[in-house]
Length: 326
Image (cartoon, rainbow, N blue to C red; front, side, top):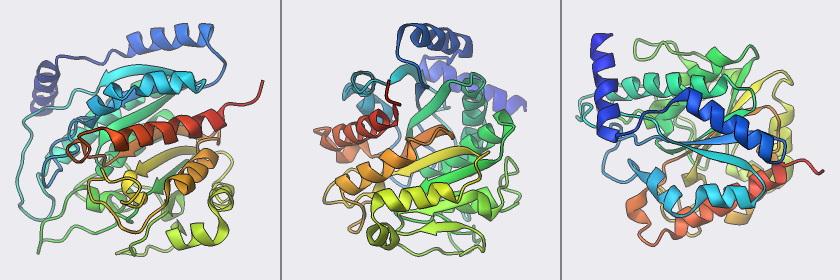
């Protein structure tokens, strides 16, 4: 416990920023009293370095801000505030020792993220919107939602991969590649949360599952194309209990690389921008969504910020659709 407190304090000093829940609450209250009714999206950067195989996605929150994410969301009619970056220690372990790269760095980050996201969720109208993270962050955010919600929890995992690889001593894998496995399996690695497979929906993947757990809801890219994005999204939402609180996870490699080239691991096969906007427009309209996270954007692949501007446009358009008519 002392070691973790030391690491968190050091991270705060390194980042030069402390996320103050009371300050966020004050901003949200002011915003709610002066803006349209509806949720308040609290944009949180997660400068996650420890899980990376090579540089790229550890400081992309800055690119989102430079590209005007808050202004774009506001122009779309959304209530949005910048909650700054969650203070992540800058010198966590970096290694390639099996089974999990840089362990226990990812777990330390998940605990910090979980604590901060839980604070934001204490206000019912606030929805954390996480940027600058890899896929493994879902372990921390799912824990936060379980702690903050008296409802059932469901994870909508929109990704070009299933990320359900089990840890194996024979080779080293990133925590992101095992993210879904951590969510649905008890293990010594992470006791923060364990969801039943029926509490998980895998959406948009073009590469097959590595574990194929019975009970997991699936809607691969081929099924989205067969049904159409709107119908596919509606079908997935209809299968989730009405009482559930939803965590919407978006890995940008669900889009094809020809349309969005700045994914950490680009996929040739994937959604077009139009398909993705239509799909997310339906998913984000659902009032059960309590957390949104956008992962695996690689700043170094996007020197002109063309991809991040597309991402912001998709998000603003989708959330604009989520605003109820007056």
